[in-house]
Length: 120
Length: 125
Image (cartoon, rainbow over all chains, first blue to last red; front, side, top):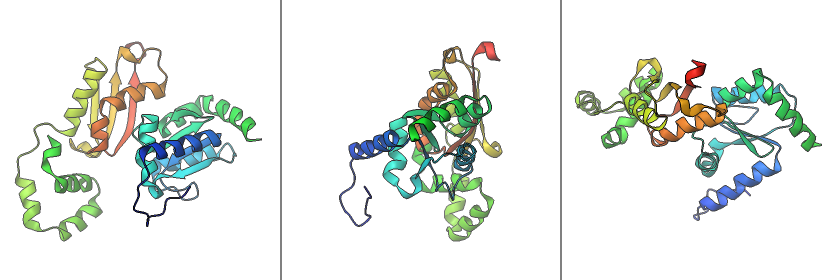
């Protein structure tokens, strides 16, 4: 559901929340970030992509810089004020420094394995 | 408070940590206006002080250390260290969420990013 900049009617917060819920439900691994996974536009978002990339999975990324409604909406949705934000199997994990910690202690790897099963 | 200084104040504060942009900004901005801001009285409390206060209150602790990047007390990037018994039994994400909630308003305004956040219980110190 793309949002044309020519439209004068703004998406309601409810609709944005719904869109975010759908993204989180339909993608086992999704990261809300600045830029795309091919071209991250912030150091923290890049870190998130590097970590996810190391698991060799097909994760979904949402560029908040290209979607102002999601940029603000996801912060209320997660009750988390910064980007990037990682969701695995519908559960909010955290930002890049939490991802680093969980990657190092193996927790993230376990969660990704479970998510892989959902991707088949 | 910070919010009473107006939009130009934010612009100047944000670009303070990026020298290249600050030069461009100074060139583009009316020098008199810049001088007026520079000579106006400082805000009653800095961003760092406000965050320290709010985090300490919310986490019921005095062991709070907030640092502005490049030692700027009104920096748009901050680092946080907190020790609080309220973190007991909580995972990293939940602990950070408590701290973020305490400074939610600042994060919508002057603070653009938290470069690092360390949340410990007194036992973990």
